[in-house]
Image 1 (cartoon, rainbow, N blue to C red):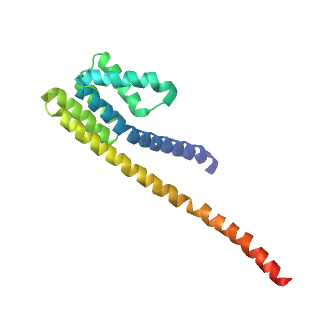
Image 2: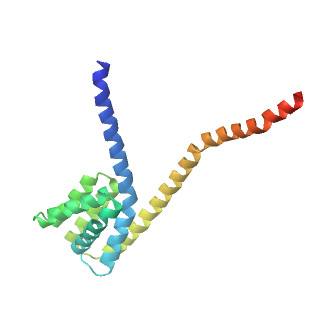
Image 3: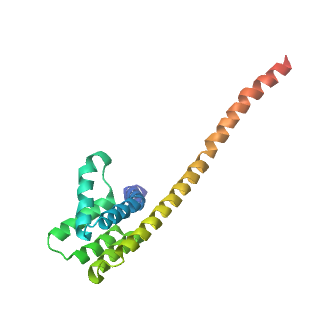
Amino acid sequence: MLLALCPMLWKRQKEAEFRQKREQQMLLDYPEIVSQFTLLTGAGMTVKNAWRQIVRTYHRKKQQTGIHYAYEEMAAAWNEMKSGIPEAECYERFGSRCGLQLYLKFGSLLSQNLKKGTKGLRDVLYTESAVAFENRKREARKKGEEAGTKLLVPMFMMLGDVLLIVVVPAFLSMRV
């Protein structure tokens, strides 16, 4: 019975690892997406054209950079827009498919932009971009601290080796 549960537990663990990896990658991609979007809309592009441009750029670079799940969700939303689904609904679906609060906020921001107009969108996007980069910096610091903590055990093991190399010959020379 235990052997029958092992593959199921292994599959669940792999799925959880995949979800965690996906979320982590999406969190890292968020500042870049918002920054690109801010730049393109600030340059005069419409929201839909900026979305299309980001997706096209991703597809050109996909061979070199590999799959990025946030951009894949953007491509799916773009395909929905091309198939005739209303633009605002596509942005909201994008946010819900991503499943992260940041993307839900971004999708609803773009959807509200279509309903209320572009007034103030640039300022909101600049603010969102700045907040996203601050969050990314905070995450980078956190990962750096975690890496430092993980390196403590090997460092203490090396300290033990060095002490053995220094102390053992000293004790051996004292006996002679």
